[in-house]
Image (tube, rainbow, N blue to C red; front, side, top):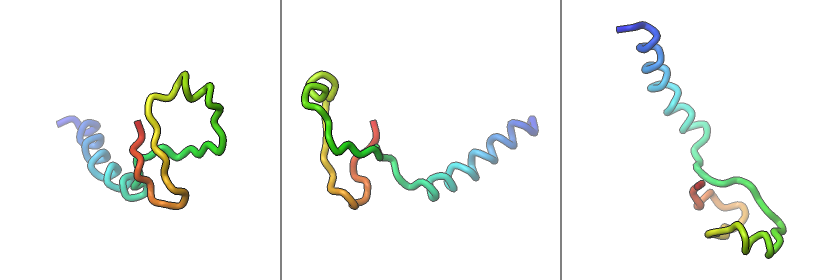
Length: 61
């Protein structure tokens, strides 16, 4: 087996779980304090509101 292929497979197996532990969220993290209604009508398909300070419950799209 090619050593570079083995290194890639090993690196993926080790680094992926570590990145999941360091960044355990899959969420949109931007906060908008004010969004113009005209902009919302044109661009937003769906939205959910989450309480500030809670753990992330809205998955990123």
